[in-house]
Amino acid sequence: MFSAVQRNIAAVQNQITSAWNCTDPTVRFGSIPRLVAVSKRKPVVDICAAYAAGQRHFGENYVQELIEKANDEQLLVACPDIRWHFIGHLQLNKVRKLIENVPNLHVVETVDSEKLAEMLNRVARSRVDQTLLGKINVMLQVNTSGEIQKHGCEPEKAAQLARMVVQDCPFLQLIGLMTIGTASSCAEVTRGEFSKLFQIRNQICANLDWEVHQLELSMGMSNDFQEAVCCGSSSVRVGSAIFVLLRSKYYSIAYCYCYYMHNDHFALCFLCEENFRSKIIEMEYNSVPYSKLCKDAENSEQNLEQSNTVATKQRICMKMNCVESFQGSAYIEINKTKILCTVVGPREAYKSSEDNMGMLLATCGKLTVSVRFAPFAKTGRLQRRRKEVTLSEEQTLATLIQQAFESVVLVERYPKAEIVLIISILQDSGNVLSASLNCCTMALVSAGIEIYDLLTSASETLEDKDDNGTLTIGYMAKLHQHALTELTGYASAESIRKMMMALEIRCTEWRKWMEKKIRAQMQHENFEKAVQINEIETRRYGK
Image (cartoon, rainbow, N blue to C red; front, top):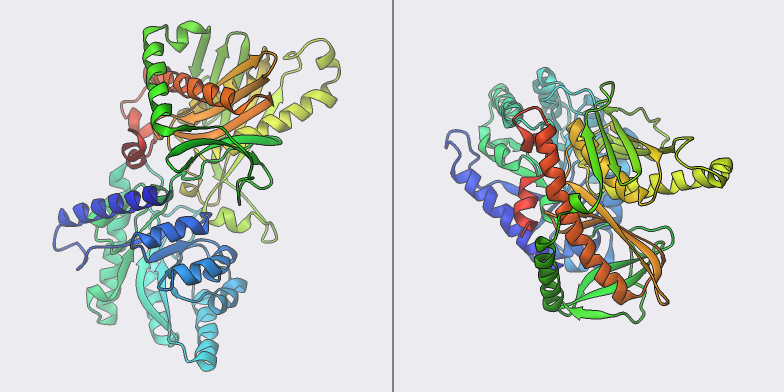
């Protein structure tokens, strides 16, 4: 785990340096841009790993999470020189809580109004009086894209806000400007927004009679930080390229199994859902050396290549953009199971201030999944007892699918927005979860939603005297990452290990077949941009 973080940081730093070296000297910042590791929703152990690799600046989006991490005993001891950047939307009623409870707060990057600046100045003044601490560093967030779902002051008002902070807020130190690029597949659009912030910075410095280097530019995230550096960024905020899916989600209804590395062994461990975030339940488990596991997988893959492809083993039919009234849609038949998935959004999500999701929606979007069985999908007893059986199954499927795609969709690229997946099960002859996951992937591609990789799914059932269970996985083959592992029934650890390897190979074949079909059906030439696979993560993890 530590080595993965270190490799990622080194790779990102190299890309930053390369982009900076290629930047026009009249545009680039005086020194190599700073890397801010965005550690939101990441455990303390990952932050310690990044710190051990030399990383000092970390960004957090949520006040409560930042307070908890900033006062964590392990971090205080292991990371004494850590510097926190607050990069999420800051509500007025959370200002005092943030300033008074976060030691080593380096900067608040999201000042977007005079009211927020006044509140920060008031709290900073009381802090100076009580503790003799210095000024609070702030950056102004500018909405260069003009998207209504994003925070930030209007570009035309940035100079006025900057003058107000400098003249009327003596306890604040204006150190830079910040913006978030559009979630666009077109690099020219993003560069245009970054260049706009560059011009705003020059205008502000001219108005204040400052040197240009006195104001930093915080712009660029995992998908566009290289373009940002080329446009003069002095600070990039990178999260997924460093911490991407280091801890994949392995949910199930009650219990599940998970792979993890331990003493050069690829161990299959038993997890309990309510405790899996914090610890692995200690118990005996079967383990196999990682080298042997890779060799077994390689042999199995060679055997599979000599056999028929997945498309010839099953009767499969798929179609994209089959419902014109939705942003994206897909239909799939696997044997007799028939699934239709439609995508609504990204659309603006309205949340009250009292809603617990309000702060989350301010900085990243929300993914919602709805599953419905058609009245004719099931027959006989199940159809007559629909309220007792089918509704419960619908809720379970919706939960599992949502949990899987929360690891796949780049929701942070759609702040204040909601993406809705509506899944209609027209006929159920088994493997509904697997078919639904595959159908959702194609629907998201059809809608142009940004994802890390194509998520493919496969399932396998064992029925013998020792094992009687079905294992379903959702797998991102290019990243070699699991988004879902669902076991129903019972199977031994050794059986699950074998099934897992076979299913990963099957999902890899599924991905090849799915990509071929998508290429054939997409009607525009920029397929790679439409799929929106993060090429940085793909190159890094796609061995």
